[in-house]
Amino acid sequence: MKKNIYVIVGLGIIIIGSWLIISNSFWRANVKETDVFLETAEKEGTAEKEVVLVIDNGEKESLTSNANFIKGMTAFDLLKEEVEKLALELKTKNYDMGIFIEAIGNRENGQDGKYWLYYVNGQFPTVAADRKEIKAGDKVEFKFEKSPF
Image (cartoon, rainbow, N blue to C red; front, side, top):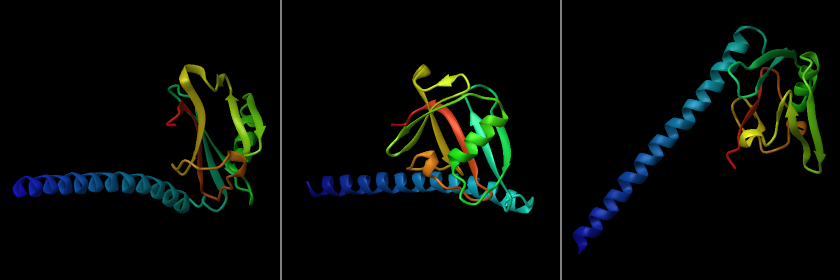
């Protein structure tokens, strides 16, 4: 009986340890990708002056544009400015918690079970895009994808 308990506890420790090692490697890989982007921007001298916007509508090619950084700029400010330059339609709706992106171009929330989500330097913010202040050198991505929620 004691031997079985030791075996079960030992297997549990091995499984939990393996899971921790794998998940830690995953998170470190994501951080390295963001760091590489920021280091590249700093080397090119653009980190002080520009931000990058990527609009990925789920098709083969994404739209990428650089914009001048303005102190106090939000992810939504960047999107709105660049969408106007690209002559894309932008539909939004105001809520108490912030502005909700309903459509960009011909992609509207709910099509094929996909929605517009945004990321800053590869991270999913916990606030609406109009409340997420960005910094010089940031990469802001609006992606039309299935929601993880």
